[in-house]
Amino acid sequence: MKILGVAFAWNEIQHIAEMVEYYKKQGIDLNIVDNMSTDGTYQYMKDHGVRTRQKDTNNSFDLITLQRCLVDDIKAVRPDWIVYLGIDIIYSLQKTLRETIEEADGNGFNMISVQHINMYNTGEKYQLPLKDCYFYGRFMSRLYMIAKYHDTIKFEADSIQIPQRKIYPAEGIIINYGNCKPAAEREATYRRRKKAWDSGLDRNYGVHYVE
Image (cartoon, rainbow, N blue to C red; front, side, top):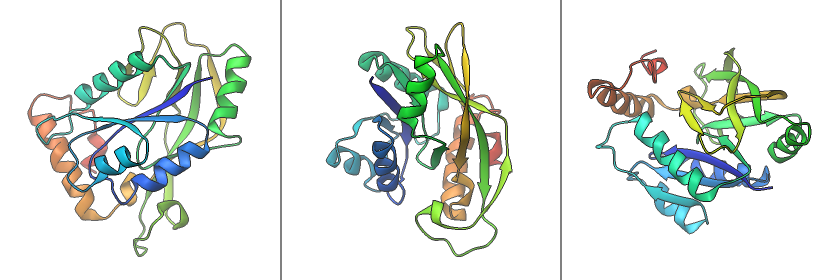
């Protein structure tokens, strides 16, 4: 079974190595669209066998354009299953991602939902890797970011869209560490989000960055 993890990245050199290693251990291949990083992220991926390409969105976080790039890449690869990832997201499940997907597939499901938790920094000294530090978390809604391939696959906000969904509720959590990053990193990302909003992107895409 070919399982493809897809994501986009911008200036994630401090976090990309751990992310790549983690998901390779989970038994999935990676496809990451680089949004014109300037810190060596793109070169790292090329040097470490990650399927990648660059997409210029004029220094704005244009989510729709980046997701369309992912869809194009997915259709070019035609994997059996897709996992929507983030550089600062960890799927922490009872089993590995591959085992979870194989179990869902074997039981006739075509999508997997996972409980989502946003993590926040409480003032600790910033350290890497993020998962080895203490933060507080807030339970969010379940996310639908793992799906069986379909020719009409698309993205809507933080979810994958396919027809006639039969959803397997996985045991485990998706942990998003994005808000644990240093303020300077968050401010830079917020500026890119704001530029996309000012260009017409729906402000609901990334509204949590205002917080």
